Structure formats: structure tokens, C-alpha cells
Image 1 (tube, rainbow, N blue to C red):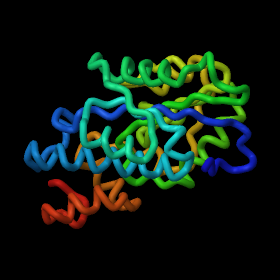
Image 2 (image 1 turned 90 degrees about the vertical axis):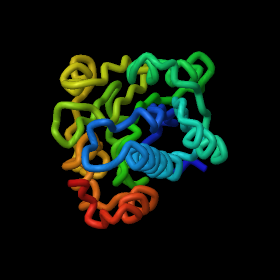
Image 3 (image 1 turned 120 degrees about the vertical axis):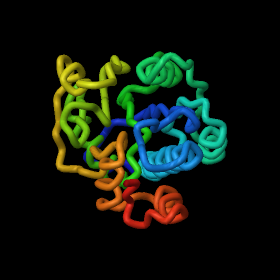
Length: 221
């Protein structure tokens, strides 16, 4: 069931790229490769669960080569596409192409959301999308202000330009919305990011991994 607020008339198709956990989050120091993989997978699933709760799993297109993540979200009813393995932007492009834009009803919007937002809650995403719906294209920057956590368009699938400094690149043809939604904007690349996400309140899977390795304060160092 779609749970988008009444003031958002858009029917969103949301693409979430998720890197294979065995190769993800290499900048998270202070733990083993196995724990990093478990943590990356937990953060992705917490993000995806919040998105599925907000919009309904049928609105999600998850692009991943991580089998456990793919199997889990497929069981929820999400569409799962294989990551082409050519980086984040190609993964997002594959997901947007998988939304079949030529076959959707009027009023459809396209969005791309990062998969490492472990503090995200459904209401954060719904609020952001309702604001984004007022603009033909929009970008929500990360907590640092330079990266991108959410990219949307109500005209056609957006052009992904993720990577360092992506907020400025996306803002060349999209409204830059520095929304007061810290849970949506706190992605995790390094240990300090994870500590900030923990302080906001991470999802159950991320919390479980950290507590399981004796890091109940959310800090890896």
C-alpha cells in the first residue's frame, strides 16, 4: 500500500543501489572485513526497510549483486536487478531503466536513494519526497553538503552524477534542497559518520551488528 502523504501527488519509483557487502565500506576502519561486510549489509537493509515501509516494496527497484540483500528485498515484493558492476552511476542508470518509464502512468516520479542511510525512518523519506515533488528535479545533499543522498525528477528519469561533489553537479539542473532531515542526509562512509548515525538512532540490523561486536556506542575507533 502506498503511504505517501496526501500533499504528494506523485507515484514514486525509487531506485536504491546496494554494493556487494564483501566489497563495501572499505573506509570503515577499526573492524575486520567480515564485520564490515555484515555492517554494510545491515545498513543497506535498514535503509531499504524504511523505504519499503514508506512507499511499499512494489515501488522499490534495488540494484545489487549482494545475494542476501537481493533475496530479502525480493521476498518483500521489490524488484531486484543485477548490478552491472561499473560503478554507482551505472547501477542507478540500470535501476532507472528497469522502471520502464515508457510504460508508467502520468504522475509518476523517479528517485534514486543511497543505500547507506541506517538512521533513515519512513517519515523522513515521505517528507523529503513531498517537498521534492514540488520541483521538476531535486537533489538532497548529504550531511556534509557536498554529496547526494536523494535525487528526484517528475519529468523523466534523472541523470545520476554521484560521487565526490555530486550535489553541485546535480544542482546544475535540479533544485538543491538542504532539508532539515538529518536521518535522510546522514550516509556512512567513515567511522565518524557511523557514530553520528548512531546518535540519531540506527535501525535494528545495524544496531544488532554493532552491539554484537561490543560497539554499543556506535563507534568503531
